[in-house]
Amino acid sequence: MGAVAAFLRETFGVPAESRTPPHVDRRDTDACRVRSLFRPPERWGDGDTGIIPLYDGYLLADLLGGALSYDEGAFHVLFIDDMIGTYDHTDMRYHGRVLISANPCIVSVRGMCEAPARPRDYCIDVMTCAAAGGDVQDVESRYGGRFLTYDDPRMQEVAHGYVTQAVFHFETGEAFCTDADCRLYNSHWQSGVIHTQVVSPRLCERHQNMLRIMAVGAA
Image 1 (cartoon, rainbow, N blue to C red):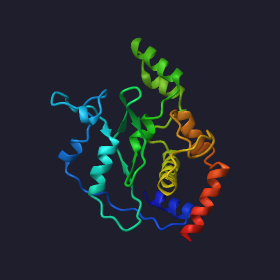
Image 2 (tube, rainbow, N blue to C red):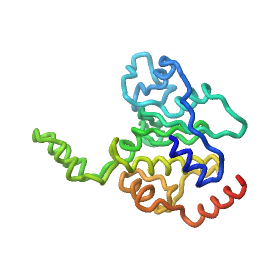
Image 3 (cartoon, rainbow, N blue to C red):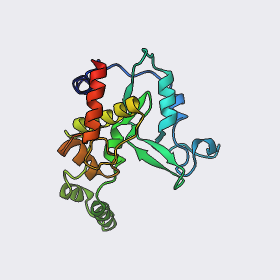
Image 4 (cartoon, one colour):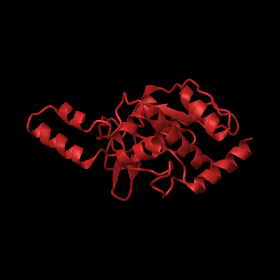
């Protein structure tokens, strides 16, 4: 988190610091746990178990936001270990997310590894290997480097990228970028995340200009 704060200071020219996370009651966080993958929160029923290892990102942002002490104009980014998701009314189900862009913003560390999809061939090989009783670790080794893992040193740079997306959204009101080579592009695949955040972590010309304007305003 100290490296993230340093990145924000250097990139945006704003004061940034790492703080201890707010304390919330476990019973309150349990209320944010998704009870049905195929129904939004307002339609969860008493019969839904709530054992899915996924939290509704917007419910969690509201809860954590209420536990924060806000300085005027402050923007909070909270990194959490748990998986978060949002309900998509288009296909009527929850999808895993890395980022809930609000204030406070939530970034899921687990989501970096699990929300963007891994290569299709990898998924097929894993299922084939498991069905044959093989060692899935052998498949993992063959695809090494093509997706993020929890001990991956690239995670730090990816964290910087998602925080950059959050700050741009907070400052401009625009969500993401349509340029697949821009750091603000919302890739749904691990290959895209690695490309935009690690291999070529740059902003498109339009967002570079917006960054210059933001930096001048901060100064």
